[in-house]
Length: 359
Image 1 (tube, helix red, strand yellow):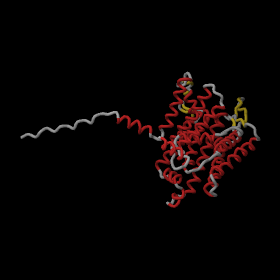
Image 2 (cartoon, helix red, strand yellow):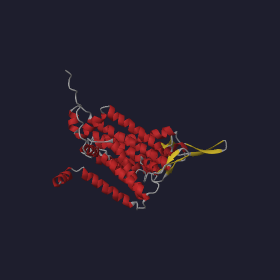
Image 3 (cartoon, helix red, strand yellow):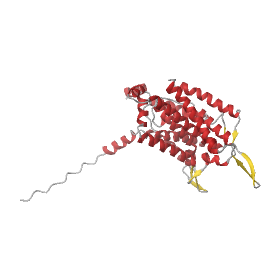
Image 4 (cartoon, helix red, strand yellow):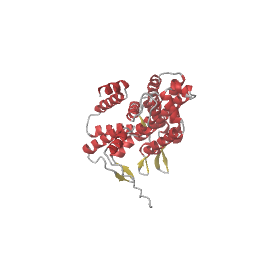
């Protein structure tokens, strides 16, 4: 007696619900909204700006509007990285622009450039060894962060008040150092940080990628990211659970200022001078906007480094689009304010309740 052959189960019917479910899950991803916003801007540029996606190689360097946008967004990306961790702990740092001005000023004044004649050939040499000048500028930025961290974590001042002090004093100190004048740099190697190329790609992008990689690994491979998130969700509970909340808050402000200091070096190197009056002006607001556009909650506890990078690209792409279309630059501020209003509204619990009630 032979056994009856087993029948393979019939395959489940393919319905349209599975693709719809996967598409819906993709839209629910935290980075979906910022990516869609960036894609919409790029499509707009593709339609109205001829040759927007054109890439060229000149002298082994990659050029094109896209490269220009990413390169110009590098200082903002650095500032947004630091701001992300600060906002993740329920804080805010509005002294970023002042730290940018201060670090750039110090580096430009120390590097400077004096013309000497070697074997009949004139050349510029640095007033101070460049490594020492950069270290001094970064040291000043770290001290600024330590000051903010001390006020916020040690003296329990409100973050916006504590950093407002440095926002005013830092730029004022930079203006005092330069006597309100623009300090020009002539030392050629200093320009590499802001306008040099490595393997055909702007060196500034390598710097941003290195900082992002180190910070990302530090947050993912250690408990630091979880600790920062816990402080942002409930600092009292985190402290009662044994976390050194004051040390963590102090650390994020120092890191934020260090990122701003590096951005200041980048800007001074790119424009070959230090302008204490305008360098980094309103950069703190762009950094906050980039962080919120990337999905980081202003209430703390929820943050995304990748989202902040996308947010910075959105802002720089928006600026490039407005300038390229011949729209008056003043419109840029109005558009940014509308975007800030929309982002704040989307994170408002009261607005969400009203929206759900009417839906």
